[in-house]
Amino acid sequence: VNRIELTDKLKASGPFLVLAPLAEITHPAFRKLIDRQGGCDLFFTEMISSSAHLKGGPLEPWYIDPSPEPGRLIYQLVGSDPDEIVRAALSLSRQKPAGIDINMGCSAPEIMKKGGGCAWMRKPEAAVRLVASVRDVLPGDVSLSVKMRLGEEEKPEELLRFGLALEKAGADFLTLHPKTRKEKHSRPTRWEHVKTLRSALTIPVIGNGHITDYPIARKRMDETGCHGLMLGRQAVREPWIFKRISMDFSGRRESFTVDLFDLLVEFATLLIQNQPPEFYRTRAIRFSAWYYANLFWGHRLQTSDIMAIRHPDEMVEIYRRYFDTHPEERVKTILTSL
Ligand SMILES: Cc1cc2nc3c(=O)[nH]c(=O)nc-3n(C[C@H](O)[C@H](O)[C@H](O)COP(=O)(O)O)c2cc1C
Image (cartoon, rainbow, N blue to C red; front, side, top):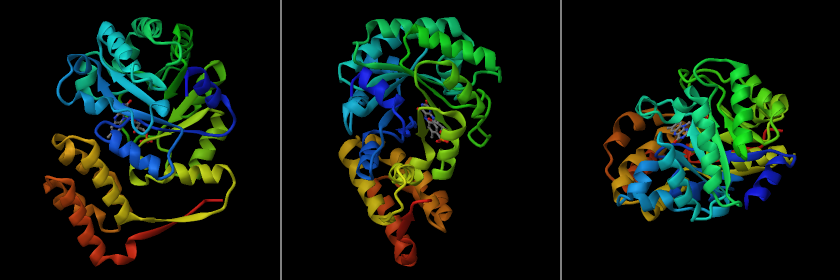
């Protein structure tokens, strides 16, 4: 899709479902897995460092792979130097993605310290200038978006001013993870702020945080009127979640089955095919860290056995042994919630 089509799709009624950027998780192999499990409307890459991208190290080509499809892909850039972010955005736009996103939400200390991620919200004028400069160089059909948090504190007027200024500077849509910089993943989200942005802005607003099933997704859409929902961790636990939620939204009462072992094997195969050996171990562990939650005794695997693997095949063997012992857990019937 091009930029205009993307905005139109976002504004159309019905939920627009988006895969969140998750470092070391939403790489090309994982995105292909999600696509095979029914897909979603838009895929975010994991954050890509602008400076590393420009330096062009040996692993960079693996971050650029636009799978499953450039037209449904948003590259997310992280960085602190506006000039580098502008140049990296221009460079990535040559892959013809649906868009480029600037990470203004990441609160990890190593990113914040350098002035990237959520640190941009501490310097709103510079952040707005950055968005305008990226918009200036991007081809007209590539969208530009920002993923953000509430900021340092919960200050609705400041958030609103920031959102309006980003819109004026040329952002095509915004994603809000409604928590302050300090709040960790376990803290509750405050969706009234998604509603505030949604009501005041002309551009689409996507809400993100703690969506785990259809009833919550429905509630968030209804209470905020937001244009889309972005899911992160639940998509790793349940790579079929988008299919399930869209069936529910369309009012279809259906069921389907998922073979948890086959799905894991598929992920391991995609990982080996689509990522370099340097990434095999960490990416397998990262995936399993959420996927194991499907298994009754899964926590036992994750704390010891999985941490010791060196290759995705070893992860497959661990899960094979698990299902040999607990065959009744292998096939799961997924029923829509209605
Ligand atoms: C392991 C992990 C890695 C993440 N990496 C990124 C990232 O690269 N860029 C980003 O903007 N947010 C990142 N986030 C935040 C998520 O995109 C999302 O905002 C957060 O997980 C809340 O959504 P969820 O409850 O659906 O998971 C990450 C979160 C987690 C748990």
